[in-house]
Length: 317
Image 1 (cartoon, rainbow, N blue to C red):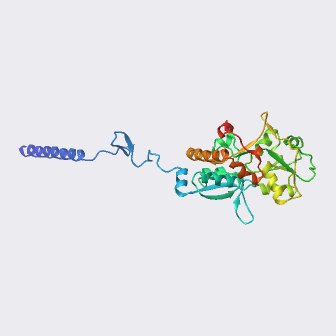
Image 2 (cartoon, rainbow, N blue to C red):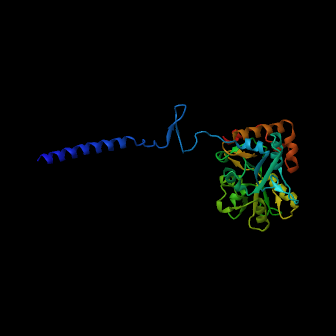
Image 3 (cartoon, helix red, strand yellow):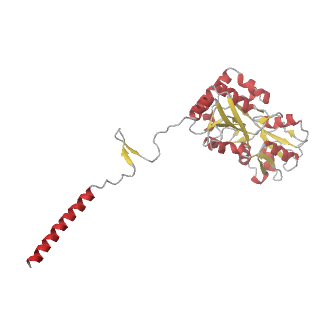
């Protein structure tokens, strides 16, 4: 029995030693990581491995000034932006942008002609630094982009076959005749105007650009086309076309009790307020010095099309 007691005593001592060793091993393990959080030198918690809390990076304007260049998306719409026969890019919007950018110290401009409907998506996708060409300021677009102040104001126009066979003099005339169809460029404000007047969607035929719109009228696929006055007149003048004429006594559409005038402007991405502000300052200088009219008059704009003192903020409200 004495031997058994001695054996039990030895086993108890060994058990105590082993348990003590396990406890020490456990206590030497490092603590669990705290979800990647560490404490910065200022005492605030900062995430390691997550996104930086600092905004960082240069603005579009800062990058443009450093490079001395911007990329601009232009709608392919005469007289706002188009290529001449020798491949030169010009137009009201092109020349205004070029002049304002020079005032800002940016001398190189890479212009890309695209469909009107691709302007805002392309800007938001950062394919362009800014967009322009026949784009009217309105509240809906104001939710998507930052508009500079307007460069011009224009009214609508109606183009028809010679002799005006359908006797059209207003959007109301189109509404009154369900068999009449009208061609419009995709994304154009005229689509909204026509719908608000009460023209049925089935009467509105939409095309990618203005040449396609005019081509549809020539081919007899639509009875009329609508676009801004300068755009329509540019087609008539440049082509000296006898297959289309402008309705000279066209009645401007009245929307929400007001005769509509379109105010066109350059637009920037949301967040590029510094670019918008600098552009506005350059544009205002052209207005104050009387140079704006000099720039836009070769493209069919007159003093009546100058925008006055109205701002983009007023037009978006």
